[in-house]
Length: 185
Image (cartoon, rainbow, N blue to C red; front, side, top):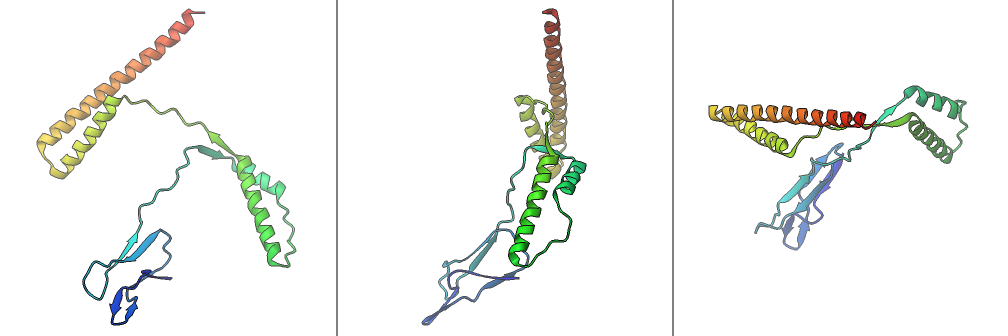
Protein backbone atom coordinates (compact mmCIF):
# COMPACT_ATOMS: atom_id res chain seq x y z
CA UNK A 1 0.00 0.00 0.00
CA UNK A 2 1.27 3.45 -0.87
CA UNK A 3 0.12 6.93 0.14
CA UNK A 4 0.34 9.57 -2.57
CA UNK A 5 0.46 13.30 -1.94
CA UNK A 6 1.14 16.36 -4.04
CA UNK A 7 4.72 17.69 -3.76
CA UNK A 8 3.41 21.14 -2.79
CA UNK A 9 0.86 22.15 -0.13
CA UNK A 10 -2.83 21.92 -0.97
CA UNK A 11 -4.17 24.20 1.79
CA UNK A 12 -2.87 27.61 2.72
CA UNK A 13 -3.90 29.13 6.04
CA UNK A 14 -2.69 32.07 8.08
CA UNK A 15 1.09 31.50 8.47
CA UNK A 16 0.71 27.83 7.54
CA UNK A 17 0.68 25.56 4.52
CA UNK A 18 -0.22 21.89 4.70
CA UNK A 19 -1.04 18.93 2.53
CA UNK A 20 -4.61 17.80 3.15
CA UNK A 21 -5.35 15.75 0.04
CA UNK A 22 -3.98 12.21 -0.12
CA UNK A 23 -4.57 9.15 -2.27
CA UNK A 24 -4.02 5.52 -1.28
CA UNK A 25 -3.08 2.92 -3.88
CA UNK A 26 -2.25 -0.76 -3.60
CA UNK A 27 -0.38 -2.95 -6.10
CA UNK A 28 -0.48 -0.28 -8.80
CA UNK A 29 2.52 -0.50 -11.12
CA UNK A 30 1.58 1.93 -13.89
CA UNK A 31 3.03 5.47 -13.96
CA UNK A 32 1.11 8.30 -12.33
CA UNK A 33 1.47 11.96 -11.44
CA UNK A 34 -0.09 14.05 -8.70
CA UNK A 35 0.00 17.85 -8.62
CA UNK A 36 -1.58 20.69 -6.67
CA UNK A 37 -3.27 23.18 -9.00
CA UNK A 38 -3.26 26.83 -7.87
CA UNK A 39 -6.31 27.64 -10.00
CA UNK A 40 -8.85 28.74 -7.40
CA UNK A 41 -8.95 31.90 -5.32
CA UNK A 42 -9.56 29.97 -2.13
CA UNK A 43 -7.32 28.66 0.61
CA UNK A 44 -7.56 25.11 -0.78
CA UNK A 45 -6.01 24.04 -4.10
CA UNK A 46 -7.56 21.23 -6.12
CA UNK A 47 -5.38 18.18 -6.68
CA UNK A 48 -5.01 16.45 -10.03
CA UNK A 49 -4.11 12.76 -9.88
CA UNK A 50 -3.36 11.28 -13.31
CA UNK A 51 -2.85 7.59 -13.99
CA UNK A 52 -1.26 6.68 -17.33
CA UNK A 53 -3.40 3.64 -18.08
CA UNK A 54 -2.45 3.55 -21.75
CA UNK A 55 1.12 2.47 -22.16
CA UNK A 56 3.02 0.83 -24.93
CA UNK A 57 5.10 -2.25 -24.69
CA UNK A 58 7.86 -3.05 -27.07
CA UNK A 59 6.65 -5.72 -29.42
CA UNK A 60 9.22 -8.27 -30.43
CA UNK A 61 8.77 -8.58 -34.18
CA UNK A 62 10.82 -11.79 -34.39
CA UNK A 63 8.87 -15.02 -34.02
CA UNK A 64 10.75 -17.73 -32.17
CA UNK A 65 10.29 -21.41 -31.45
CA UNK A 66 11.72 -23.08 -28.36
CA UNK A 67 12.55 -26.78 -28.45
CA UNK A 68 11.71 -27.66 -24.85
CA UNK A 69 13.46 -31.02 -25.00
CA UNK A 70 16.73 -29.28 -25.95
CA UNK A 71 16.05 -26.73 -23.19
CA UNK A 72 15.63 -29.46 -20.56
CA UNK A 73 18.64 -31.44 -21.75
CA UNK A 74 20.82 -28.33 -21.68
CA UNK A 75 19.78 -27.63 -18.10
CA UNK A 76 20.33 -31.28 -17.07
CA UNK A 77 23.90 -31.08 -18.37
CA UNK A 78 24.70 -27.64 -16.94
CA UNK A 79 23.13 -27.61 -13.48
CA UNK A 80 24.70 -29.49 -10.61
CA UNK A 81 21.81 -30.84 -8.57
CA UNK A 82 23.80 -31.60 -5.43
CA UNK A 83 22.75 -29.57 -2.38
CA UNK A 84 24.47 -26.20 -2.28
CA UNK A 85 26.60 -25.13 0.65
CA UNK A 86 25.32 -21.67 1.34
CA UNK A 87 26.82 -19.85 4.30
CA UNK A 88 26.15 -16.20 3.51
CA UNK A 89 24.09 -13.76 1.49
CA UNK A 90 26.91 -13.60 -1.05
CA UNK A 91 26.64 -17.36 -1.61
CA UNK A 92 22.91 -16.97 -2.27
CA UNK A 93 23.53 -14.14 -4.75
CA UNK A 94 26.16 -16.20 -6.59
CA UNK A 95 23.88 -19.27 -6.77
CA UNK A 96 20.95 -17.21 -8.07
CA UNK A 97 23.15 -15.48 -10.66
CA UNK A 98 24.55 -18.82 -11.85
CA UNK A 99 21.05 -20.32 -12.10
CA UNK A 100 19.77 -17.29 -14.01
CA UNK A 101 22.66 -17.46 -16.48
CA UNK A 102 22.02 -21.17 -17.01
CA UNK A 103 18.34 -20.49 -17.77
CA UNK A 104 19.22 -17.70 -20.19
CA UNK A 105 21.85 -19.82 -21.95
CA UNK A 106 19.44 -22.77 -22.19
CA UNK A 107 16.86 -20.49 -23.78
CA UNK A 108 19.41 -19.13 -26.28
CA UNK A 109 20.56 -22.68 -27.10
CA UNK A 110 17.05 -24.14 -27.57
CA UNK A 111 15.33 -21.20 -29.26
CA UNK A 112 15.55 -20.45 -32.95
CA UNK A 113 14.06 -17.62 -34.97
CA UNK A 114 11.25 -18.67 -37.28
CA UNK A 115 10.83 -17.04 -40.66
CA UNK A 116 7.52 -15.28 -40.90
CA UNK A 117 5.36 -16.01 -43.88
CA UNK A 118 5.46 -13.17 -46.30
CA UNK A 119 2.47 -10.94 -45.81
CA UNK A 120 0.07 -10.63 -48.68
CA UNK A 121 0.55 -7.35 -50.46
CA UNK A 122 -2.57 -5.21 -50.52
CA UNK A 123 -2.69 -2.46 -53.11
CA UNK A 124 -3.03 1.11 -51.84
CA UNK A 125 -6.43 1.67 -53.45
CA UNK A 126 -7.80 -1.44 -51.71
CA UNK A 127 -6.35 -0.27 -48.38
CA UNK A 128 -8.12 3.07 -48.82
CA UNK A 129 -11.38 1.29 -49.61
CA UNK A 130 -10.98 -0.88 -46.50
CA UNK A 131 -10.54 2.26 -44.38
CA UNK A 132 -13.63 3.79 -45.98
CA UNK A 133 -15.57 0.56 -45.43
CA UNK A 134 -14.60 0.50 -41.75
CA UNK A 135 -15.71 4.12 -41.26
CA UNK A 136 -18.96 3.43 -43.11
CA UNK A 137 -19.54 0.29 -41.06
CA UNK A 138 -19.06 2.25 -37.84
CA UNK A 139 -21.51 4.91 -39.05
CA UNK A 140 -24.06 2.24 -39.95
CA UNK A 141 -23.69 0.55 -36.55
CA UNK A 142 -24.34 3.91 -34.89
CA UNK A 143 -27.14 5.26 -37.08
CA UNK A 144 -28.67 2.10 -38.64
CA UNK A 145 -29.57 4.03 -41.76
CA UNK A 146 -30.60 1.94 -44.81
CA UNK A 147 -28.72 4.33 -47.11
CA UNK A 148 -25.50 3.80 -45.18
CA UNK A 149 -26.04 0.02 -45.24
CA UNK A 150 -26.47 0.15 -49.03
CA UNK A 151 -23.23 2.12 -49.35
CA UNK A 152 -21.47 -0.35 -47.04
CA UNK A 153 -22.59 -3.30 -49.17
CA UNK A 154 -21.46 -1.51 -52.35
CA UNK A 155 -18.00 -0.85 -50.86
CA UNK A 156 -17.65 -4.46 -49.66
CA UNK A 157 -18.52 -5.81 -53.13
CA UNK A 158 -16.03 -3.42 -54.70
CA UNK A 159 -13.29 -4.51 -52.27
CA UNK A 160 -13.96 -8.19 -53.04
CA UNK A 161 -13.91 -7.53 -56.78
CA UNK A 162 -10.69 -5.48 -56.70
CA UNK A 163 -9.00 -7.98 -54.36
CA UNK A 164 -9.94 -10.89 -56.63
CA UNK A 165 -8.66 -9.04 -59.71
CA UNK A 166 -5.46 -8.09 -57.89
CA UNK A 167 -4.80 -11.67 -56.79
CA UNK A 168 -5.48 -13.01 -60.28
CA UNK A 169 -3.13 -10.44 -61.78
CA UNK A 170 -0.40 -11.34 -59.27
CA UNK A 171 -0.82 -15.06 -59.97
CA UNK A 172 -0.75 -14.46 -63.73
CA UNK A 173 2.45 -12.43 -63.43
CA UNK A 174 4.00 -15.13 -61.24
CA UNK A 175 3.10 -17.87 -63.74
CA UNK A 176 4.40 -15.80 -66.65
CA UNK A 177 7.66 -15.29 -64.80
CA UNK A 178 7.94 -19.06 -64.29
CA UNK A 179 7.15 -19.74 -67.97
CA UNK A 180 9.77 -17.30 -69.24
CA UNK A 181 12.30 -18.90 -66.90
CA UNK A 182 11.64 -22.33 -68.46
CA UNK A 183 11.88 -21.04 -72.05
CA UNK A 184 15.36 -19.64 -71.48
CA UNK A 185 16.80 -23.04 -70.61
